[in-house]
Amino acid sequence: MKLTELFDKGEFVVTGEIGPIKGAINRDKSIHPTCAKEARSLHGHVHAVNVTDNQSAVMRLGSLAASVALKQQGIEPVYQLTCRDRNRIALQSDLLTAYSLGIDNVLLLTGDHIQLGDHKEAKPVFDLDSVQLLSMAMGLRKGHDITGHPIENPPDMAYGAVVNPNFEPLELQLLKMRKKIDAGAEFFQTQAVYDLEVFETFMNEAVKLGVPVQVGLVVLKSPQMGRFMNANVSGITVPSMWIEEIGSVDKDDRKKKAAEMMGNFLRQIKPMVQGVHIMPLGWADVVPSILETAEISIQ
Amino acid sequence: MHATIQKPIQEIVKYIKPGEKVFVIGCNNCAWKCHSGGVDETKMMAERLARRGIEVVGYTVPGPQGMSLCKLDHTEKVLKEDFADMVAKADSFLVLSCGQGVHTVIDATGGGMVHPGCDTIFGGETVSTTDIEEFCSLCGECVIEFTGGLCPMTLCSKQLLNGPCGGAEKGKCEVDSERNCGWVMIYERLKKLGRLELLDPYQKPKNHAKWSRPRSLKVSTTEATFSSQAGKVTVSNQE
Ligand code: SF4
Ligand code: SF4
Image 1 (cartoon, rainbow over the protein chains, first blue to last red):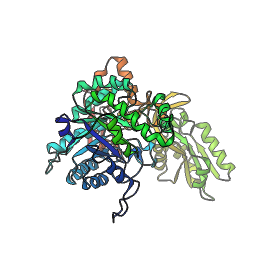
Image 2 (image 1 turned 30 degrees about the vertical axis):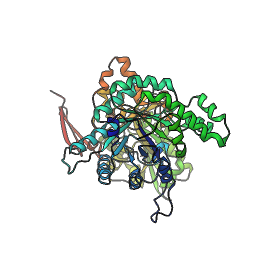
Image 3 (image 1 turned 90 degrees about the vertical axis):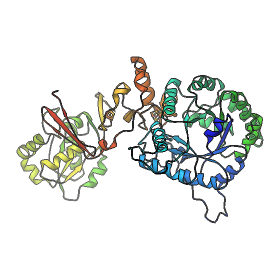
């Protein structure tokens, strides 16, 4: 099922996210990787689950293998594909492979830089940027590769992109967003936001572009995590108010608190957007209560 | 200019076999500016090697200040005419310059054994006598007309052509919080120039065949021909 069909129907689209394990999928299926367990606890509460592509440039199980594994279990994946590790030949080939294996939704991104990950001496590829990648994906849909050669049985998938509402200057980020839309982006998932005002300012502009936006939420699990993100994760700011609030309860009560905080925040944002993308970072089990607090349920 | 930095002496010493006689050659242009292979550093290198028990048969930095070691006809003349005796005695040449200069010495000595004394790190602007900074990655297909002269292939860590990634924070790159985001710099500059519209058009992927190695340039006073895996391109400077 393509997410674009849901947006077209006017549904509030809910997606979650899992990060593939650092390792392979067990062949006799006797051990279930943690990411599969997380995906299962999201099942029924979200329309689809993003599968990250060597997230933070940390080498892991491929996003396509994990996406296909989810699909086989009846969970709709959003296959993430980045420019960091693949040149244009590999990117196109992976898109054809993804479609051939039943993938319906792809999120196309530049990818975190290699210096952020665990293989710092690797050669960064970045043959294309995300705008060029989107444009190339549209070409495949129309039946030709990036050099203009015709392809058989063109793949037809929904293509999403990302945008960071926290970016300063915002005008520059909006320029990139516009270019992504012109290139073919059909929906957006945003970087994690915690500031209502910042997000409102962004949406006031983004809404004019007429493409569905899912607000991105990273579940804040502890004050330590908030401080860590502020110090180490570029492009995300966690206000001290959030850090204090999650720190105001005992460890054992943090899941409940996080669900309440994220849920209340989402309830305020809900009228501005066409969906939400929740990144639970291992706390997939709090997603249902976040959605419940925000008064969101999927069809 | 080609920015170079000397290799640690411990590493250089390891290149030289026991009993090997060495001639040290510097460069009076880029390596001189980098203090990696000018007149002083070349003389010093000869002394540093000698102190470590290595037999140095001679040293030179061909030509006056500003003369590049990589100018083959000049280097060849100096080595063959002015230093013929020492060169004849040398088993190898330790070259304090960029990799182009090292190759020039191979050519100038009829295929002599060479040791690189420097790491060649980038092509840069001599911002001051103590500061050399990289603004171009020599990609073979210049795109900086639409970025106000600031190179996204060099100043953006991901070499993005259609605008920034989402990672910059407070104007700094996601890769290094000490370094300005190339795209924020491009934006600020074009805004100041009142030319932000330059950023609007879609920029197609780069032709990496023009960034193939090795490339060559044949020149005359009226035209130049650039050869790469993208083919030969001849451009006239007369029309
Ligand atoms: S676009 Fe290429 S040629 Fe132009 S400044 Fe950048 S690296 Fe150099
Ligand atoms: S933060 Fe800026 S310079 Fe760094 S990779 Fe992103 S766009 Fe390029």
